[in-house]
Amino acid sequence: MSMNCLRKHVGNEKGTTIVMVAVSMAALLSMAALAIDLGMLFDSRSEAQRAADSAALAGASTFQTALPANELVDTARARATHYAGSNRVHGTMVQAGEVAVDVFQDEGRVRATVRRRAIPLWFARMFGVKQADVGAVAAAQVIQSGTAECIAPLMIPDWWVDSNLDGKYTAGEYYDPVVTGYGMAYRDPGQPGFVYVATQGLYYGDVGRQVTLKTGSPSAAMNPGWYFPIRLGNNTGADDYRTDLGQACPPRTLSIGDLVYSEPGAMQGPTKQAMQDRIAQDPNARWEGAKIVNSAFGGGSGDGSPRILNIPLFNPTKQIPSGTSAPMEVHNLGSFFMESINGSGDIIGRWLNVRGVPDDCMKKGNCRRNLQALRLVE
Image (cartoon, helix red, strand yellow):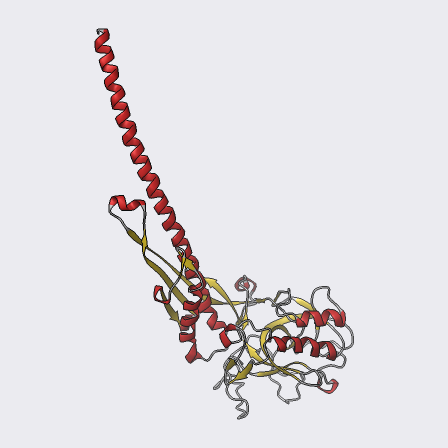
């Protein structure tokens, strides 16, 4: 091959290489540009998923409240929509019209769908795609649990069949935590333990039933020297008791079967101080009909109010402590709206279902239907 032909051949390859490089660069730039759009869509999809998750959990949490059955569905939808609206997708807040909520009341389950339409794209426009939709679905459900948190330093007897109505367990009286215990259906209308009292109304699963959470009178105590206070962890004495009782969410978690220790003494002063502090944070809340109203928390529903106490319940058939601290096994867990405290230090509450913590209670065999935890199921 002559030198001139060789030079011509090499020159042609140089031109071809330049063209190939230019085409490759254009393809790479296009792919990079599309990657930016896709990354933005993936981020928006993740934001929509967070909004759907929070909406589903918020909606399902309605089944943990004391609302009447005829109010649950509408409240669940409204709560789910509200919580979805506290999230952003692609830089703007989720709107009510972008949220669809399905409520399955019999299953205690709520499904939320969040869809943001027509998100503008940048580089995909080169290929004729100007916008895209993103969406996400989540479902949450209440499940039985055997564990609760935010435990207050009080412990009351679980419910038994008090045949002689003396307020104290007598040998032979019937007790079974999953039959007669608080939160069970034993006292529902039409059930064996139902007794109609005109001044009290009807209760289902004991929700709304008045209960004495702490007595300050020696004559009302189940055993002299103990008035229902307990020790949380290593805390002992009146000062620790008052501090724990005054906290809206004491840092203590308990499960069915755990042991706690009684705190002897009436504790009238510390009890009044702690309860007055709680009431002062939500002074207008009250129980009306079958629910909490006028609360400064939860949009008036009392959800999250410091006047709600979670406390353990003990087996009433066992020996009651007297003037010394003694171990006591947790047989049930209850949540109560603190209605009032009188001059003697008696705390009167209304039974609520407990917000449980997801656990392995099915394996342990310590689930309670009144301990209701939330979990995402979709």
